Amino acid sequence: MIEEMRERAAKFIQMKDMQEFRVKKREKEDAASQKNAPRPGKPLARPNQKKTPKFTTYTPLPVPRTKILQEAFSVNSLPASRKKPPPPDADGSKHCQYHRTINHTTEECHTLRDKIEELIRQRHLKKYIQ
Picture (cartoon, rainbow, N blue to C red):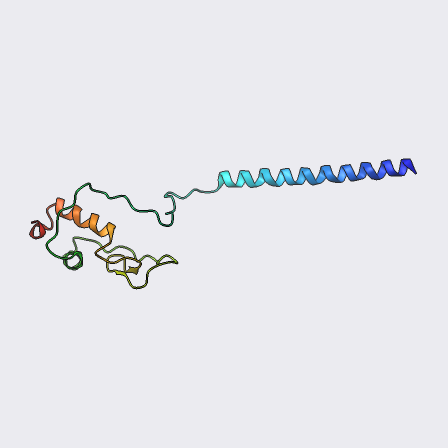
């Protein structure tokens, strides 16, 4: 009877050791696959993360950015941005003509503000400099 219990206990211990071995092996394989996985070249944007301004000062504009955007598109001095899908919590009442999406207006668009400032500093939009 005692011998039988010892054999059962030994088998139970052997079973537990095999389970632990399999778990550790799977963890090592997962860690190795994560090391070999390609990393994105650009970190993903975090929700509610504000974009830092590209310039410390911006040229005051005598006309709305939407008018400058339309003219810049017509003379091909500003390439159109790729259409971006709106975030899940996007404000549907706002639309950006530059990004062709909802969530912010063309006047609020920080990317467009930076692009216009670059064009002004490159002397492409001289008539808008006050």
